[in-house]
Image 1 (cartoon, helix red, strand yellow):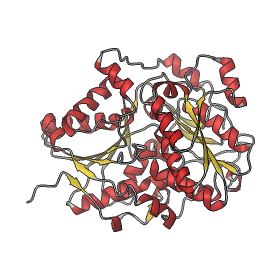
Image 2 (cartoon, one colour; image 1 turned 180 degrees about the vertical axis):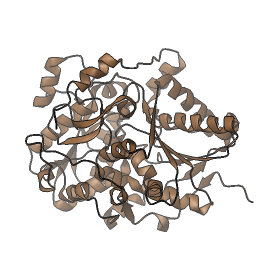
Image 3 (cartoon, one colour; image 1 turned 30 degrees about the horizontal axis):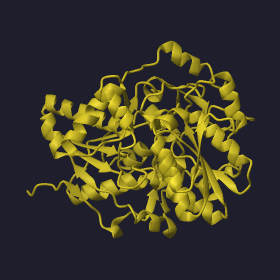
Amino acid sequence: MAKVPYKTYLTEEEIPKQWYNIRADMKEQHDPFLNPGTLQPITTEDLYPIFARELCKQEMDAETRYVDIPDGVLEFYRMFRPSPLIRAYNLEKALDTPAKIYYKFEGNNTSGSHKLNAAAAMAYYAKEEGLTSLTTETGAGQWGTALSQACAFYGLDLTVFMVKVSFEQKPFRKSVMETYGAKIIPSPSDTTEVGRAILAKDPTTGGSLGCAISEAIEKSLGDESCRYALGSVLNQVLLHQSVIGLESKIAMEKIGEYPDIVVGCAGGGSNLGGLMAAFMQDKLTGRHNSRFVAVEPASCPSMTRGRYAYDFCDTGKITPLAKMYTLGSQFIPSPNHAGGLRYHGMSPILSKLYHDGYMEAISAEQTRVFDAATLFCKREQILPAPESAHAIYGAVQEALKCREAGEAKTILFGLTGTGYFDMHAYAQYNDGTMSDYIPTDEDLQRGFDSLPKVE
């Protein structure tokens, strides 16, 4: 049998023409979003002031299995998709494992991440509706960069509220977003009521994604021609990111492979949800029984130590309530370097699948994650983003288990992006000044105390 190539590429014609809606095959749906004022289930119309209308429909749709990708989005996708499926031969050799390790590399675009898949859809639908601007938040800066690119392409103005600690750690991310025409504001800021309230409580706070979301939504609600765009967590985002898993499945079929284990980093759920969607469909419908492993930072362990409860999606308590694994909307994570994994909650879809036993979750300290990152970059010659390195860590752990058991399992993980804007983190790791922070039970309890009382 011929050796599997290092890289498996699809043709442009093989880019999926439809997104896959995993909700259509779930045995039970996640609990409904609730209106924060009445605590009653929200309607599609309730979301119209926040998101573009077509996105509101996608958010609430639990029945349509496949959604056509508009030609205007496919045109955008063709500039950077399909992305390669890569066999990590050299990492396998370094680990001395019988496991076969594959990764889907989403970093071959300016944003350096998978985020561009959803950004293109959101900007397209906003433009089609006649809107003129969007607002958003960003943690590590990948989502903000991706939406900056998409808004520039479709001709929309964009304001990005960037988590303050990331704003300070990654100044060149700001420069890239500004190159595409976006306005960048460190969050929390004095430009919104929510931001001013947070700063009054703690003037030195480094911020959080929950804070930045509150500010972005507040700004969008004040302008009829503006809407808000969220880069993770929501059903619509997992829908758009399903292109990752759909491509991965086609590529693996080309080489006669199917993953026994699918591993992804988990912050809000966009990357993992997108990577695993096509394979989770097979599990839900009884065709295959792969394992799915979410890897999150020990400093923000929403799945492994969080509560499955209704919570606000933002710190300012503006958004609808979602039933999800959460640390509480008032939880402020430590300013570690996994900026895109600092969100207090997890996608309602992934939370439901995890709660029902369809997937697993582990957490890891950032020094152990960077151990895996540096091993990977030395062997595979790609410098991974800290977020992506969590998936690498998880894949390495699974490969080592295979070595111990003598099992040649097939592992697929998502390499969500590159780490070229994360050199401050790598510098701290290399000079030994990087530290690990794991919240105590008391730290987490303060977040749990903020959970709304929902019967």
